[in-house]
Length: 393
Image (cartoon, rainbow, N blue to C red; front, side, top):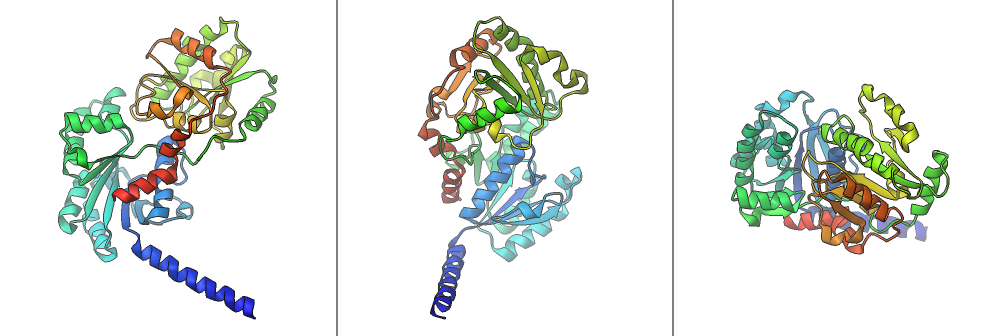
């Protein structure tokens, strides 16, 4: 009886302490105007993990689309207030709905994912006075210009106005932040870093095991070096990078007398005309397609290849590879946004279109066994990131 009563008492005290802790937490509202649960792309993963960890640091509510899986929102409240239609971006009824929610719940801060809802953010800010942040994943007009969208000049004007009116902006890369400060005269005091994060908090201990499992899975000799490329292959910049690997880099590797190797290609959306890369099977290429669990590939690979030369923003798979202790060979554009100082020798950068230099970098580092520096995890581990962000907001 004593043990039972003591347990109940401890439970009551813990509940009271937790309630008091929640009451002290900042109440944050996030508008994420697209599906991200479950996530399939790097951008969706960014949002899903950021919100998961932010929910541990704040009393968080997220307004998003109806096609998210609410059961996966474990640390915050998810309100499916937005329709799945593209017309949600011009739904003027949202002014009244979101204003009512902010006033009822008395949120301290609202964060808008991407600048697309700037018109709505400005109206709600005027009505409620709520502190308003924009979380941008790229300088969007530059990304759309790089992939040939004709309407990028209109987006440029809209995006610039969005940044200038916000109380604060979170940038995924230092380069984007400096661009906004320098070119658009955005107050530097309003500009903050929010890099793509990782859930791996230290150099993984199971790299050798993951490598062994991949060798077994693909029936490869133990001395085979594993090179990895991963990305949504229906996305034009990723497809161009894949073709560079197949037609530029790999022929150069085949001419060298280096160790045995295989290039594993992961990702969905490969065009039908490429026939699952059947023509490359005898050229050290393995097409794995979409894989449910990509982390064992990041850990098991000896080198991650990043020849992406357009699209903007941080190439999230590169960050994840570094977290998994894998050396990354990247072109300069592909490495944009990384804090190179914390990556040590694990990040090797060559000039864009220098495929001979790219192939040489692979050969020079194909047997690299160095560890990812601790400073990398201090900067890119999600709990560290959201702790800094919660202090800002």
